[in-house]
Amino acid sequence: MSYAPLWDGGPDYQPCHYGTTKPVFRGPEREIPSNGIVALGSTETFGKFIEFPWPERLEGGCGKPVINLGCVNSSVDLYLGAPHLLDQARKADAVIVQISGAACLTNKYFAVHPLRNDRFLSASSTLAAIYRNVDFSEFHFIRHMLSTLAQEDARRFATIVAELQRCWVVRMRHMLRRLDRPVLGLWLADTAPPVELPEGSLGPDPLFVTAAMLDDVRSGFSDIIEVTPGAASRSPDGRGRMFNQMDRHAAAHVYPSDVHQQVADAVLPWVRGLATG
Image 1 (cartoon, rainbow, N blue to C red):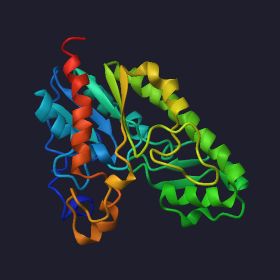
Image 2 (image 1 turned 120 degrees about the vertical axis):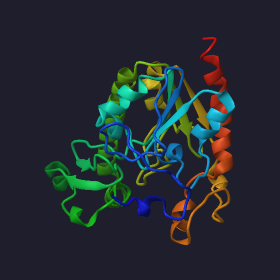
Image 3 (image 1 turned 90 degrees about the horizontal axis):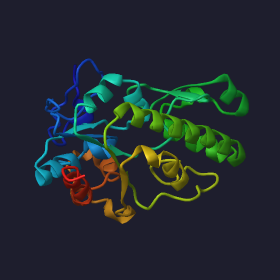
């Protein structure tokens, strides 16, 4: 199997799988020791275009093994759909969960790809009936589909968002119960969790997650740490990222290496506190 489309020209990600799971992770594959930390999350945790992502930097600072189980463009659905990953994570001393968005979740309106959660699979008959003028066969990616629905009718789109938010809260609670470990939530975004979302648009990443939703799941976390470097940190010149010219546009949308260091520095006190907690 060839993995070149994911990382050719970037860092050597040494792609691997854990057990019988199909998602591709950043390697090399490692045993998860009882005194280790497991990092779950999306593109930022995986460290796409980054030579040394924050889990690796954290390991260098805390002296504990930090196993990177971040997966590009993943949501909570990826981990709940691969229970073996959560079983693996439970072997560790603690888990860090990067807060992912609520957009890429299968729900009563549409289905997402179980491995590549950013991919649109199909619309339900209910969604097709709500948006009769939309041809859903044109969509391949969730963000494109949702952007179109938001522009088509803001009122109807609010109903879709509410369903996604409900699914996110239910599934995040379920995942945290399954982990049954001390879990640190990592909010990595341009700004703090929003109180309200803008009407008629997708809003900021992680998509559709609000401060109230975090409050709803907060009891499942030992703590939640916010790292908010701002949009300006993602300079279009590619500083602090590794990529080929074909990936220049995509690389401009990820946080550079200095933000990964900010994350490691912010998380380090919590990890050190595990020994005394």
